Length: 47
Image 1: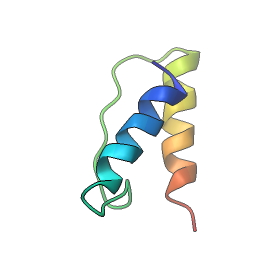
Image 2: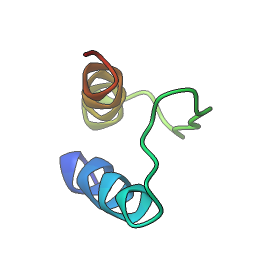
Image 3: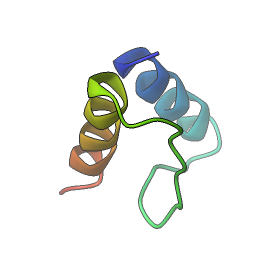
Image 4: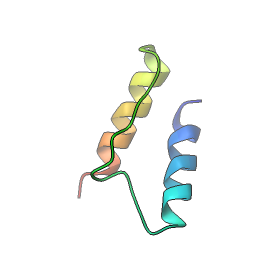
């Protein structure tokens, strides 16, 4: 869990020429790790 999950998802999306932009993402939980994941996903969509 944590950033690894985000990096894995980015890698899988990249194989089909996609990214997080415009996607709906569901994260279960509200602890520090989950909040960090969401922040990283949001930052990765900034250009």
